[in-house]
Image (cartoon, rainbow, N blue to C red; front, side, top):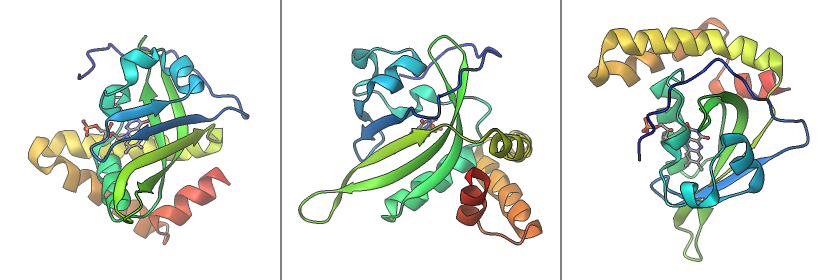
Length: 174
Ligand SMILES: Cc1cc2nc3c(=O)[nH]c(=O)nc-3n(C[C@H](O)[C@H](O)[C@H](O)COP(=O)(O)O)c2cc1C
């Protein structure tokens, strides 16, 4: 189910002690969501289970961020990212997400696990303009070349700051 929600300018914030938890299968289909997830996203458990995690995808998010996320976790590594999510009522909420692979008894990836917490406001202030530039580059490039164009913007920002992706993200969250 792709959402057809009209985004609004209403922002909801996580509290510092709340954690949004979800699990997915290997394709990103939701297999578990905790109460905090349901509460802030505005969906019932029934509406979330078996849906693709892109049910929360906000149109302000660059595609290259999700490409990086999937490339990283499919290789068996954890990924950290700031993500702007779209709730069912059109409002949005920023999270600092940690996504990790889940392994079966044969050491094969059997799904993914994500824990999100409140991002630092300074981190969002720093990341938002980068995402805006990435999105603009993606839109200018068109669907076929979008991810490459968004990735290029991110890479040049990292090069300018002489820092790699994960150290930047972790330093922003502090
Ligand atoms: C464990 C896990 C958690 C995810 N959490 C989110 C999320 O909170 N918000 C989001 O937009 N995408 C999330 N994704 C990424 C989505 O699967 C999807 O790649 C993204 O929404 C982009 O949608 P698209 O692939 O249809 O363009 C998550 C993926 C995994 C594996």
